[in-house]
Amino acid sequence: MKNIITLIIICFFTSTIFGQITDPVATEVWEPVPRVVSSPSDKFVPSDAIVLFDGKDLSAWKSARKDTLALWTTDGEAMTVKPKTGDIESKQSFGSIQLHIEWRTPAQVESEGQGRGNSGVFFQKRYEVQVLDNYNNKTYPNGQAGSIYKQYIPLVNACRAPGEWQSYDIIFMAPEFNADGIRVRPGYLTVFHNGVLIQNHVEVQGTTEYIGLPKNIAHGDAPIMLQDHGNLVSYRNIWVREL
Ligand code: MG
Image (cartoon, rainbow, N blue to C red; front, side):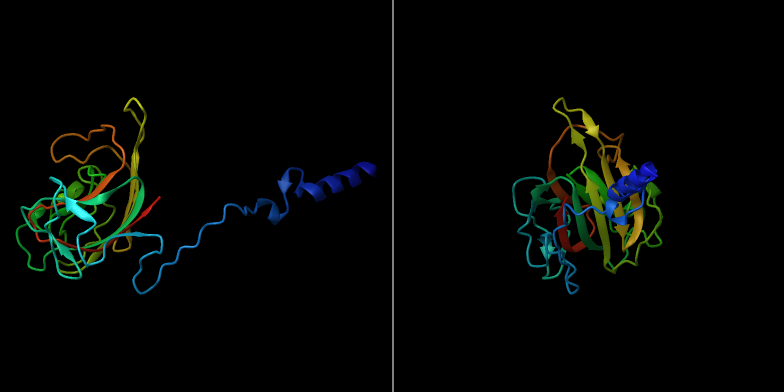
């Protein structure tokens, strides 16, 4: 009898019966408390986001070729590639981030394959999530819209018609390199295209090369780069949250 009473007392204080947790409170975790982040419904920009473009100007961007101004055009809402002025990059460098970006390929369809509404969002200037008009436009699938260029085919084709605004919501986990320049953790990408999951935590193989295999040369934080592929692709509402 004494042993049973002892067991009951032990169970009472440890909330367990023969090793099984019986008290719901025992598995509640109260720290740390997530900080409050608001996401107003009118603009959908979270309160802790860094806004890289809100339509006003390109002050958060510069030419990726040289230390000069970004020369793409703006109209108060969007920025548009100005062909032959080159890629542009954020002045700020980033590691792992959540990125929201909206893009639109030209309503007037010209060319085909990789020549139709081509641009791209490069993380750390090296890892491209392809932007392309793939609404009834065939190309190699590992180079279509939403592909991790020449590495991962998107799970589905969520493209809207040319001339319509589309969105990417992307989680980029930056690769890590040790002091010897060896990659000790690969990068990862998760991509939602117009709210549809198209890349599910894929392991970035290295740089997204047009020709040849991915490379893994050590680097640190680096800018987001948008590609001038000669097509009049527009972007708007660009914000990031550092992770
Ligand atoms: Mg591209």
